[in-house]
Image (cartoon, one colour):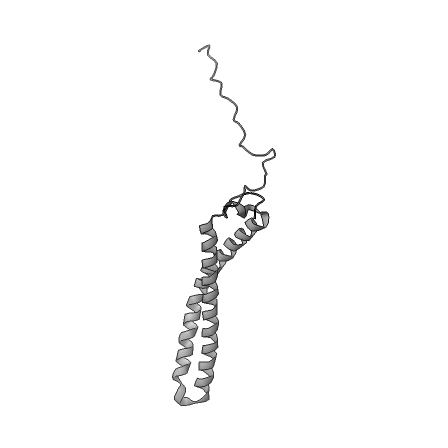
Length: 127
């Protein structure tokens, strides 16, 4: 047997952070491009929602017109076509609207906390 002792390893250091392992999340600044895309996504979602509303009203009008007279039965098919368009547009609306809401909330939170002066080129206290 050897008279050597096993190699001494340093004790593992704790991860950086506050004691107890919990701390508030770090502040992440949002850029001007992030603000711009938040607005673009929001307005695209509003536009898609308005188009869906117009298509729904038009489909109801087409159904009423198709029901009024047998000679106008083609309007019922137009209403059905609009319903398929509405069904296809709803996932698009969700894909645009949900990220837009989250991004705008993050931008508003930054403005409320007063961290937006950095991206406007202002020094703290100037306005």
